Length: 246
Image 1 (cartoon, rainbow, N blue to C red):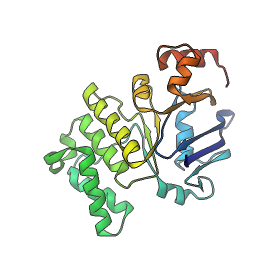
Image 2 (tube, rainbow, N blue to C red):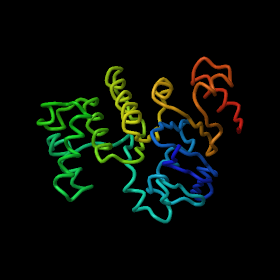
Image 3 (cartoon, rainbow, N blue to C red):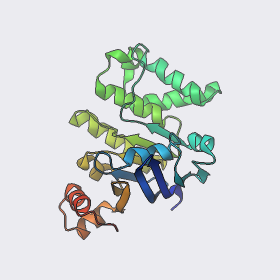
Image 4 (cartoon, rainbow, N blue to C red):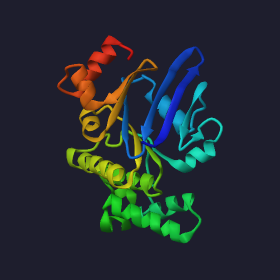
């Protein structure tokens, strides 16, 4: 399987605090990989280094063969990053927002229009795209933002808490969209979430990080069998509390 992302001994030091310590993992084409861990485990720092928003203290991450340290511009051409706290311009009409964001990626009008049409199909907001974003529900905004994130067909989409605060039905729609993009278009995803049900539903593999150390990676069914666990929450508890390195 082609490796879209290769993370090699990635570390981040903040003054005296080692937030991320030699983390290594990879993501293949069309694969959905979830990075999970307790608050303060190093997930956000890891994601931000991969996204070129933070410079690693040591190690590197390669997206489609491009170094996040040495070729950040090339990496940004291959990825999209949707943080948990992401918002949209509330006074802007949904369609205008998509057109504006597409214009930041492309200069060719045909490519802009194609990206917008793609986003419209993904978010499924219909006529509501003619309304101001300030009138949208949280679920509608997250659908719009996800569509914006993937309309450029990135090689790697990085999503932090993609369904945070959503009701069951809206969350389910987002998860189904992610799986469809991976399965039908071969798009790769790096997801961070505290929702273990979500991780089990959407992910192919998972990595558990705690105190800056990547403790475990593997296919969900395999690690559930290894730890004789009924679900991912039980695996998470055993690995983090046991602090076992594998």
